[in-house]
Image (tube, rainbow, N blue to C red; front, side, top):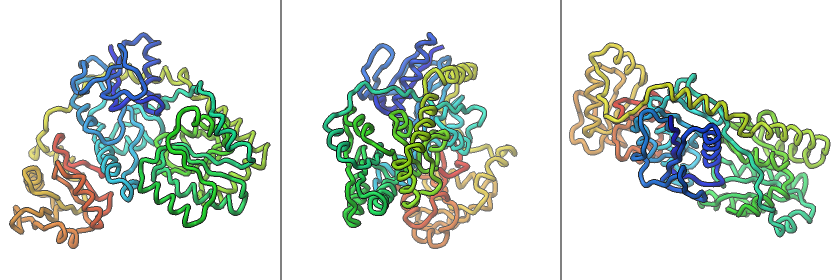
Length: 486
């Protein structure tokens, strides 16, 4: 048996990179032949086991190998992996819901739409899955993955950086007696930086004016960052520092001078910075949401209420109550001790061996839709859309879908939407242009059949007032209407 790990980009200093290299270490010491293939290496050098390739579709893998694919954001590769004939394990770390980015970054918005769409069809293409948190597992189950085939294994190796903290930063921010509140991570909408800033403003103005907020992380989502800066300026909020991306020595220094680590994110698949803060003896205050309680495991301070007053009170107690602070740190040290490679090595190997005992899976050929002569298939198809719906797109694919629906006499199909079809009827169904269809059928489900432009169509529908959860897709490769929205 060989084990081959794949990822669209292997980078040092990331959670995914950490997981991949941890699995490699486990396999190496278990004397299991293993390789990593990726189209891009970033901060990690190529060697006999880590190989940079231009096309992962052509990696040397056979049906006896176990292929571990680390699923990230929407990529062309996500579907291509399904066509590789091997025993496959999906490592799923979650894809951020696209609505967080709708207002700020169109490319990220559509990439997350694509990612969640592709995640929703993984169940049929993998033998097993590994999730970093129970939250991620529950999401895979909602996508149709069999629960018994999902292992929750937080593959995290916490190792202290050897880099010495930057002395200049420590001198600048530690000696003035200010309370330093730290956040590290991307300055992104799902992280709810505006809530962090608002809570800090309350604390700074009403509790402790000698306080500072330090936001360490990439500023790539410029519209969002500019909106945060504008909010700070309009509300005259003092002592907020944006550092952008920083080298390791500065990153260590900001943890060194921090009094509290604050996280008010509303979507996390795991959130490694929580553990990084705990590892460095910084008290963590975090909002109880998505995977955060899984990651904290009872350590730190978990908030059910993230109103500014509640957040400020939690920070103030840590700063002023030394006994309480030490209790928090004690709990965090225990939690951090649980994240070492020995604690999960056997579980990773067990998951791999279970996959190895299975048959190889491959989704390569386009399927016919569903055999309408088969009563079982009729039963499967009918409940997929048990509410009224519109078929969006009457090209070759759309006509095939309508034909099949007509054959099984699905009474829930109320209309067809197509801006280019010249007639007002097709097979007895009303054909509307976009605006007319929305005015008549805004509150029904929409099944998008157009393959090349489905992301643009989805956005147009949402802009027209169709609810995100009412959008479905015809997956041409599998020949099915997905039984759930993304």
